[in-house]
Length: 217
Image (cartoon, rainbow, N blue to C red; front, side, top):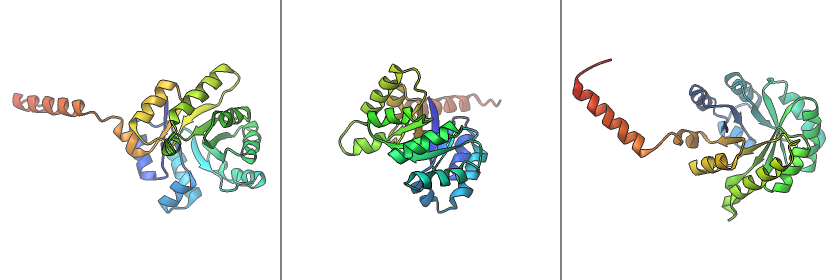
């Protein structure tokens, strides 16, 4: 499974990219607003750090507006993936853009039917939102499981399942077990994946025992 980080914080992206664990980045209007920085400049900086896909979302909600904004965004760098909403206008834009060789991330997916439509429109990625489904009392992982089953039924569907709205380390594990192609993860959750109390206690014991030897390497 590929790891994308869900942030517009350039400093965090640089830190995580240095680990070799990062395959791409997703942003959205909320993350850009939180950063307080210029949108296009931020995307440009992120694309220079990460060689994998960097999702940049259109602000328009109509097809013509999406296409106009996508033309601006995809000129920023070759690894920009245009992010469009899962609406009829968004799917229409998706089809036009992917037919022209542009990566497209269809976002705000909340049903398997929507995911099927995104794949038929040629989406590079579809982003089912796990956490937001959990928030309303549903099981977001059930949606990942349904999409995986549908996509596996039809080998001509090449859309990657991008598990989004991830809130916990268990979300990452469950998405991997089900077979999501990508998880887009907040930096704090990505860093937490490495944590285990037995690793910490074992390392502390190794350090203490080594110090007793009085040796250096």
